[in-house]
Structures are given as C-alpha cells and as structure tokens.
Image (cartoon, rainbow, N blue to C red; front, side):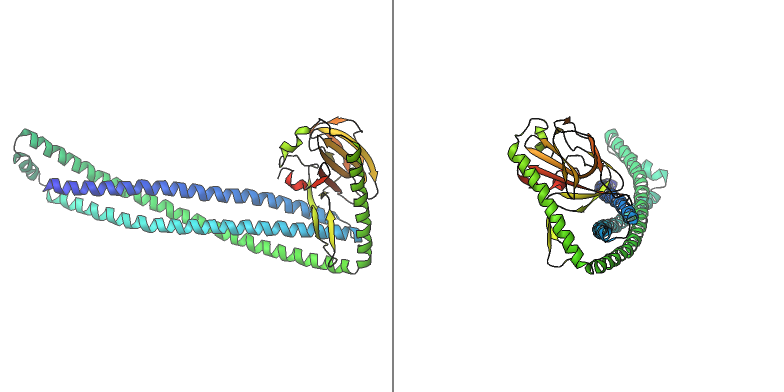
Length: 395
C-alpha cells in the first residue's frame, strides 16, 4: 500500500517540477523580451527629447521677421512631427506594459492554483506521516518483509518518502517566492504605466501649444501672401541656377576614382554638420502656407544651432567652389560617379582640385548677424540623378 501511495506522489512530484521549470523559463523570457522592448523605446524617446530640445533652442533664437517667421514655421512643423513620434513611442510602451501585466496576471493565477495543489499534497503527506508516527509501525513494516532484500527496499522507500516530503516543503516555499516576485513585478509595471500616462498628458499639452503657435504663424504669414509668392519665385530661380551649375559640371567632367566606393555607404554617411535639424525635406511637398502651391527641393535644408562647421560626408575631390545667388558659396565634391553639394557656406576652407577625406572641414554655414543659426543646403547626385540625402546619411 505504501508503495502505491509513494508512486502516486512521485508522479505528482514530476508533473509539478515540470510545471515550475517551464513556468520559470517562460517568466524569464517574457520579462527579458518586454524589458528589452521598453528599453529600446526609451532609448528612442531620449533621442527624440534631445531633438525637441535642440529645436526649441533654435525657435527661441529666432528674431521676429517675415523671413524668420517662415523658418519658425518649418521648425514648429518639425517639432510637432517629433512630438507625435514621441507620443507614439509612449503609447507603444503602454501597450507592452499592458500585455506584460496581462501575462503576469495569467501566470499568477496559474501559480496560485499550483500552490494550492502543492499545499493539498503536502497536507496529505503530513497526515500520512502522522499516521505512521509510531516507530513500532515502521518496525513492523520492516519485519513483515519477505527477506532481507525486500526489507532493504522498504527502508529505501521510507527514505525516499521522507526526502520527497522535504522537497515538497521546499517547492512550496519556492513557488510562494515566485508568486511574490510576480506580484512585485506587477506593482512596478503599474507604476511605469502611470508614469507613461502622465508623460502622454504632458506631451499632449505641449503638442497643443505647438499647434496653436503654428496656426498663429500661418495666419500672420497668410497676410503676406504677395511677399511669400515673390520669395518662392526667387528661391525657385536660385534653386534652378544651382541645379544648372551642377548639370553643367556633370556634362563637362569625368568620374574620378577618389571615393568611388561611395555607393557602399548608403545609410552610413556622416552628417555634413554636427548639430542640426532637417527643416525642408527632399522632393516635392505642399507649401506650408500657400494653398495649392507645391515646392520642390533637390536636397535637404538643415537648420544649424550656431556658426557650425561643414564636413565632407565621404572621401572625394573638390570639384567646384562657386558663388550662387541665394546660396552664397557652394562646394561640390566628386566621389567617383557620385556628387555631394554643400551650399549656403559663409567661409570655405578648401580649394578646387583638393583631395579630402570623410569628415574634412569644408567651411562654415552662413547665418545672418542677428541670428544664432543658419541653414545648410545639402544634395547628393548619382551622375544626373538627384537622390534623397536622408536615405544616405546615418540615422
């Protein structure tokens, strides 16, 4: 009879051990993955916060004129986009926390059921031990054996039974500790969710303020529609002049060998300035103020936060240093069959024909005397095809 009882206990022991092992593995993997996802989101959010801070400094540094109102509008539009990305990251974090909370609660419910099973089993063991508490019972159990071999087997069974009872007590303690750890995790996750919800509330307030500022700027600029159209026509003519200079150079020059591996660095090129924000993207997009008006950009415009140095994004040869109305001075670098263009420079530190390496100082960005930052116009060409620089620069 004791052998049958012990075998049933042994089977139950194996199943419970298996559950605890699988449960612990799932808990470790689940906690690790959710933690990694949240850490990745927080790293991204930290970068977005730094970008918002730099954009705010640029906004505060601007003088209030018609020209700078348009620049401020571009900066505000950029900041609104960043804040929307920031909010999306927070919402993603909350979704991860909610999923983790749900999984932890499911595991807690399952673990509580298993603990009840262990307690019931352990109580049965204690009752069985109580029934056999008399040493005479154990002696009779040994003496009733058919020979020494069976008596020894019964002795081993009793030893295993005692060890199993101790293991059940330890298992109960381990399960209860695990349950406590899960409950602590849930408390921490609830606090994290509460903090994230507060962040969302704060960001919505800031976003609303940004949108109000943007609307005020748009209304102010709409009163200047005639001036805006004149400015747009002037800028388009200047952009065409720069494009014609580049195309003329392409027609009259041959691809060199310096920096010919440029194509291998797509998505890996350094930025042409150390600090700055893209305020006008590549390609065609609606005018921020004028209705039914499309503006075209052959590159990107980067708003800097000071009299920043401009750097070569890759090894190459200085092909042209030219003055362009509206772009001040432009530097064109050839990298094999590719070209990079750095326009709106105030000072230039290189000369035509000079070989430069990645990171070489080309000069400084032009800025107005009363302004704390300027705008670098940057283009990338593959022969006569314009490319979006964002796809080539390191994120």
